Amino acid sequence: MPTRIVIASGNTHKAEEIQALLGDDFDCRTLKDYPDAPGVEEDAATFAGNAVKKALSLIDWLKHHEDFAEGWVLADDSGLEVDALDGAPGVRSARYASDTTEGNSPDEANNAKLLTALDGRPEHQRTARFRCVLALARAGAYGQPELFEGACEGHIAKAPAGSEGFGYDPLFVPENFVDTFGTLGAEIKGMLSHRAAALRKMKDWLDAN
Image (cartoon, rainbow, N blue to C red; front, side, top):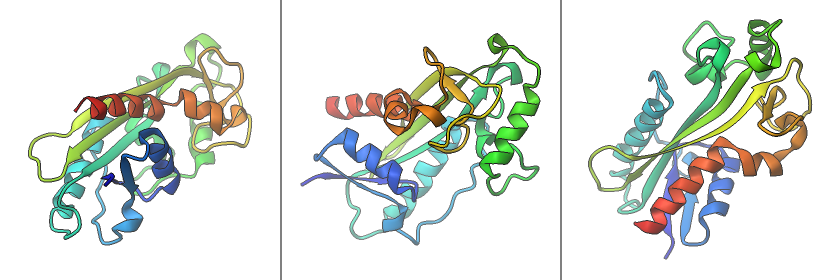
């Protein structure tokens, strides 16, 4: 019987990506399968802090759920780090253009603010990376989740290009490429992405344990 992994997200695409990587030995579910699960305020100062907070909150709630006696909970947090901006937008990537701590900003607003912040800087001063941290917690276990980190290096273009992807994809040019993720498309992004790198590390750990 496949081992269940409940992903602390309602994103079906993310679940499909994780399921494809892990294979038939695992059964990936999302918060859509557990609609009563409580929300979590992502107010930690680091990606790891937010991922751990989401994983522990969900594992605590699921232990009272009758069909989750064993298995795993997986949570992630990710975002864009720009070197010239001292790592910003970082954990605020999804709400970079907002003055509040609640609710995400439109992608267009976030991208516009980033371009303004980097206005006039040459390419060598526009280096950046997407970073992802996964937190994996076992049902019924105690202590901190296992953490797995992945990154994708690149730089920020001077203007958006392409309509593929979401978030900062139209601005992010991965290392050794000349086009943005918005132009390169989902297949290439899937091979290079920060989340894919973290998931490969997680799979290696699961295979060994």
